[in-house]
Image: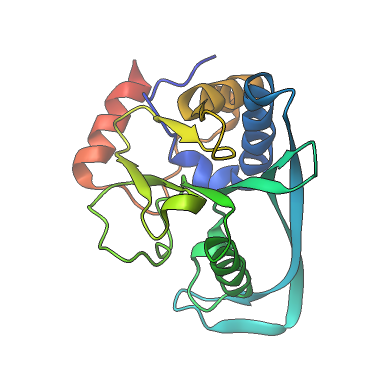
Length: 226
C-alpha cells in the first residue's frame, strides 16, 4: 500500500533505517541501469568500519564495545576502462553524528572525492544529526540532495525540500562527453515503501524521532487518519 504522506516518511528514520537504506540503494541502481547501459555499469559497494557507541553530544559512551558498521553506496564505472565516474551516497546516521567514527571516515572519503574529477551525488534523507559542512549556509529544509560535478567544483547544485513535499528527481552526471540521466527519488522511495509493507510494519503510534514541529505533527496526523 502506498504511503499516505506525499514524500519521505519520518517514521522510517528511527524504526527501519538500516533496512530502508540498503533497499533504497538497490532500487536506485535498478532504476539507473536502463539509463546508463551499455557504456556504464552501476553496482553497490560497501564501506566497512568499526563504530563506538556515542551519546547525544557525540562523546563515546562505550569505547570498549565497538560495533562493525557496513554502509552501502553506488558506484558508476565506465566499462571501457573501469574508471569511477560517479559515486552516489545516501547518508547514514553515523555520517551525521558529531565526533563519530563513521562521520570522520565519511568526511575523509568525501574530501578525497571532491579533490578528484569524480562526480559525487549526496542524498540526505535524515532529519536528525548535524548536516555535513558546505561552503555556503544551507537554507532551512528537512531533506537535501547535492550534485557535485567534477568539472564545476567547488560549485554544487543543491536540492532542498520539506517533509510536506515529494522527493525530487535529481540529475546524475556521467562522463563530460555524455548526457546526464535522472534519478527519481520519489519513485525509488515509493517502490521500497510499498515492496516492504511499511504502511503496516511502521508503528505510527510511536513519536517521530527527531520530533516534528507542532504544525508538522498535526499535518501528519491528519494524513495518517485518512
